[in-house]
Amino acid sequence: DAIAESVDPRTSDKGAVESLKKLIMNGVSAKGAATPGTILQFDCLSDGSVKVSVDGKAVGSASGLSEPFCDVFLDDNGVSPAFRESVVENCCGVASSLSSSSATSTSSSSHNPIHIIGSLFYHKLKLPKLPYKYNALQPIISEKTLRAHHLKHNAKYIETVNQIVGEGGVSLKHLSMEQIVKSKTLKESNPVLYNNAAQCWNHLFFFRCMSGSGGGGEPTGLLAKTIRRDFGSFDNLRKEMESSSIKAFGSGWTWLGYDKKEKKLVVSTMTGAGNPLIEGIIPILVIDMWEHAYYLDYQDNRKEYINGFFDRLVNWKYAQQNLKHAMGKGIVPETVHHVSHHGLPLVAALFSANLAKKTAVHMLFQQS
Image 1 (cartoon, one colour):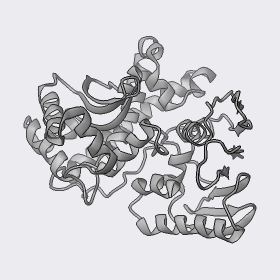
Image 2 (cartoon, rainbow, N blue to C red):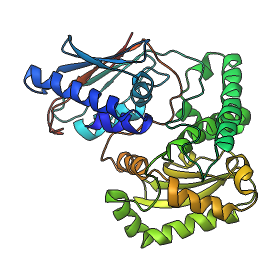
Image 3 (cartoon, rainbow, N blue to C red):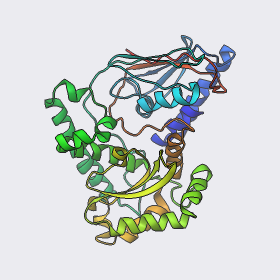
């Protein structure tokens, strides 16, 4: 369920997501049970499909999911740090770490070591596909605006990052996108790289904060409950984000984030390529307040653009997944990995079905 839930927001092919879920469940059922040491193997093939195997036995494949699937699990370092840390910390009760090629995390308790192997490699960033068609956000955001936003502005940031990293030597090539965005040192020492990398991260996150169908309205579940706790009501949160966005000087981003230290949701508007990760705040939702996001459709009427975002576009399902991860209640829907990893197999040991923290769990992630 967690795997399928993480892949779901990244593709419009819901049938493929269900196929992937059934393959995993059927494979585990055929084995008899999901026990520590069970090996789930996912091969992301060049035809765009994901092949599923359980303990070396092929179960089947789900078409069209290779790119969104890899977005969830893979990073420039071979293994998604957010996925790894979420599983290790939430399911095993130990902290994880990663060296240049492998890592072993241990605890002073009765936990067995968690062995994680990942290869370091660098691929040029590629413009990520949108999770919907260019006309899917109309009439709130026109096809003309979305095409310019994605194909011109977003693409330019990616091109610039590739150029800087390509000329920057090994030290830069070993950095993940999230490591760059979190680095105050890089922001000061290499502002061009930092700003363009942050814009790559911000745009991928923003595009996933909108839904081509069924967006808008009010959140439900954990997110709604947390908003009421921290803001009094959803209306109060919306008013604060609207006010902050409208009053913001120049270009920037209005963020809803989760402060892990204070254990609460916070709203902040950051200028330029600002991202709350640099302050230790985990992004939950964002509104792009750069003019290229709305000017062709609304000119200087920011309020109408923001109202449309909340009324018709906001993807509360995605925001809720981000909050669950921030609060340690789920697996992150990875947002920072733009690289296409077609043809690279991922092997992971499946942990016990009840996710018992006291169970000794061996996990192996290997990329060949």
